[in-house]
Structures are given as C-alpha cells and as structure tokens.
Image: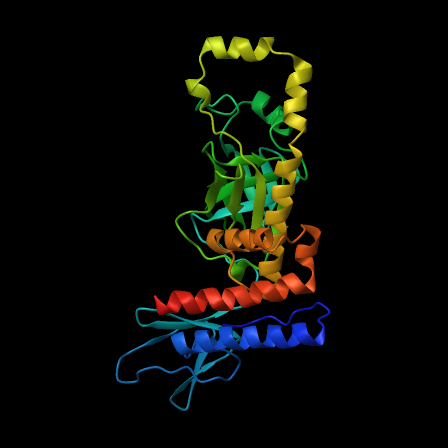
Length: 324
C-alpha cells in the first residue's frame, strides 16, 4: 500500500494523529501482503522451484526478480508483474468510461478519456434519440450537435482499439449517453478498481454515481431510464401538450438539497483521492456519513481536520474488517 503525503497544513496534533493513522494502515497492509508495494530495485519474492513468468515492471538479475518501476505487485496464475501507480489510464475492452466531448467531427465525436489518445464515438455506435435501430442517414449526421456538443460529459463503453492506438467507444444502451445535472470529478485511475458494477443509484439520496475506469467520476441527480419504444402515442401527446415553460424549469433547476448532496459526495471523493484511498461506493458513502455524523460543513470537508478524521476512520475500518 502506497500512501500519499498530505499536501495540507497540519497542526502539530493533527500531524501526530495523521502519522499514527498512516502507520496503522501500512502495518495492516504489510501484514496482509508483505510484497504489496515495491519501489525500483526491490526484490520480489517468488518460488524458484515453480515456473513463473516475468511481466511488466520486473527484471531478473543474478537469479533474483527485481522491480523496475514503483507500484503494487500483482500475480495472475504464474505471471508476476508490477502495476504502476499514478499512471495514465490503461483501457481494456468492456471498460465503463466517463469523458468529455472535445470535437464534433464527420460521423464521430472525439472524447477526452484521461488516456494518451482521445476516444472516438462513431455515430453508428450511438443509441439514437428515437430508439429505433436503423442505418444512419445524412440527416442524422447533420443533427449530430443535437445529441452531443463540445464540453458535454458522456458515458460510454470501450468497444475496441483502432490501429493507431485510439479507443473505439460505443453507447448503444439507454444507460449510456449524455450526463447532466451533476459534477465531473477526476482521480488517479489506479484508485478505481474494475468491478461488475460501475453504475450506482443511491436511492436514499436520489443520486446517480458513475465510477469510470478511466478515473473520471460522475455525481449527479438521478435520471430515470426510459425505453423510447415503450412510450405509447398517448404519452407522447401529453408530453407535447405540456407547458414549455414548466418543462424548461424542470430541466434546468435542481433542488437545493440535491445540489448540496452532490457537493458533499464530490468532496468525499476529493478527500479519498487526496489521501490515496481506493474509491468505491462503500468507502464514499462511509465518508459522507462520517461528515454528517461529525456535523462537518460541505466546505470544511476539504480542510485538514476532516482529512485526518477520514484517515483514522479508514484505519479503524480495516482493522475491524480484518478481525471478522
């Protein structure tokens, strides 16, 4: 486990408390896995009697396996490699990603993904607003800006890799597409672990949370997914006949309580990122609940005291979890 140095002014008491919490976290990590983190030239323990494969970030010198980069040792069957920390996003097919549109080009959108190249979302790989599966026409191409424009935040899935190394994206499901009424956060990609679930609906708060594998995280007001094919003509007529002013207000304004909740969750993610803790729904919600129980104001969550409290709480949580 590699901890970050907190870049915040700490009082003497806070500094002692923080260092004590970090020592407890490091001792728990080292006890659980003695070779969890390594730096350059560190020796990686392996069983030489069994065959093993040298992976990325490793080199064999005089019969000893050494690390050539700083990071965390990973083992997959016989393969031993070092996963570098604070590296840029390394995509895999099927990854859920959040990005920002930077260009509307011919039959495609270019999307920033915190990768060394931009992602490409083709018009043909996009779920059309009418929900009908059909060939894209020149009219659809002319109306591309009605779907996404520059600076829009979107969610998509990695489809494949192109020959030049760029990513091909797809958004053929209702859960993908444009994200509104929320805020986009950025953390180091290594703090996000790939899992089966990256879309989270926090029902008690009415908040949607999308943890992108590329380190972009979206926190926003919950949006009901609707299948356009399931909307009958009567509902369409009711939507058309509704007041345009009321519709505009519903789309533009978000309740103050919801905006405050979004900011609180966003600050919880920022605190976890500053401390170098893995960002998961469980830890995010525990940090949010901790701020509420301590009556910490949303703005004060970014202060030194709350960072120390979160570090102490995380050390206690891991100690309790290990006892079970």
